[in-house]
Length: 173
Image (tube, rainbow, N blue to C red):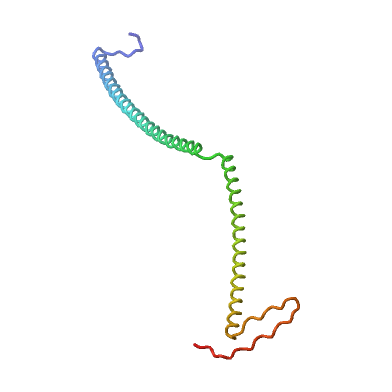
C-alpha cells in the first residue's frame, strides 16, 4: 500500500463488503418493489385505457345506431316527399283545370242571372195579371152590387146611351 492510503484490516474490509452487499440487497429489494409498483400502475393504466376504449366503442356504437335511426327517419321523410311529388298535380295541369272551371263558373253565373231576370219578369207579369184580375173582379162586384150592367162602349164618336136606371130591389140574404 502506499504511503498516504489508509490501511484497513482484513476484518474491516470484510465488514465493508458485508455492508455493501447488504446495501446492494436492500437496493435490489427497493428496485424490485418499485418495479412491482410500476407494473401495478401500468396494469391499472392498461385496464383504465381498455375500459375507456370499450366505453368509447359502446358510445360510438350507440351514436352510430342513433345516427342510423335518424337517417332512416330522414330517408322516410324524403321518400314521403318524393311520393307526394309524384301524386301532386303539375302546375300546368292545375292552371288548365282552373281556367276551365273559371269558364264554367262564369257561364253558370250568366245563366243564373238570366234565370233570375226571367224570374223577376215572370213575377212582374204575374203581378200585372193578378192586378188586372183584381180590378176586373172589383168592377164586377161593383156592378153586381149596384145592379147595373157595364156601359156599352162608344164606337167611333157615337154618343153613349144613358145608363139604365138603378134597380131598387133589396138584396135577399
